[in-house]
Length: 214
Image 1 (tube, rainbow, N blue to C red):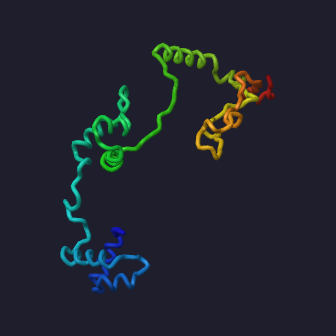
Image 2 (cartoon, helix red, strand yellow):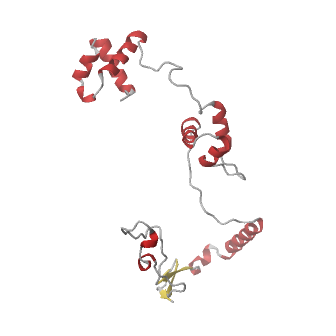
Image 3 (cartoon, rainbow, N blue to C red):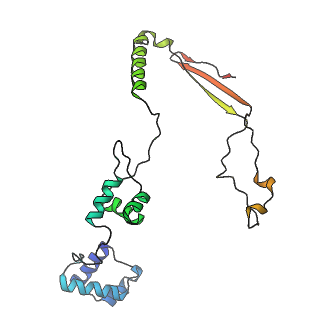
């Protein structure tokens, strides 16, 4: 089990101030479950260098998180206005860098955060002009003097046959194949044109209407 930075500093203090050895440290702090060999190696490093910091350039050299690959991933994953960025799976196909390495580059080197896209209506230039014109017309008509006469209404349709989500509707059976299960257990009937009812209500500054069932 590797030491944390605080544990390394604590062992360094024990070594410098109390001059404790590896066995003594492990016995007095047995709840830490440190191994004697690991503590001995750390003490040897402290005696030699006087520090618990990692030596620059030590460890296995990076094979995929190189500066070249970081630049390639940055160009492919960053979204532009007209060119959405590629996913880690697509980057793996293009560059040959594994998805795990791509995710480490994105998180540790580029320090990027992922955000979920939102759905919105795609508007053309004509649609935008019409909406601006409509908003200006409403502002001219609906001033503060007649705001009491403005009503906002909405409606909701309730169907007798609700939609079915087959992802959460499973059938368990001892059979090994799906063809061996009785069809009456697998098939769930659903009407295409089920009975429905619309509920409507309106509100304004003066109050609200009663609920209308259609």
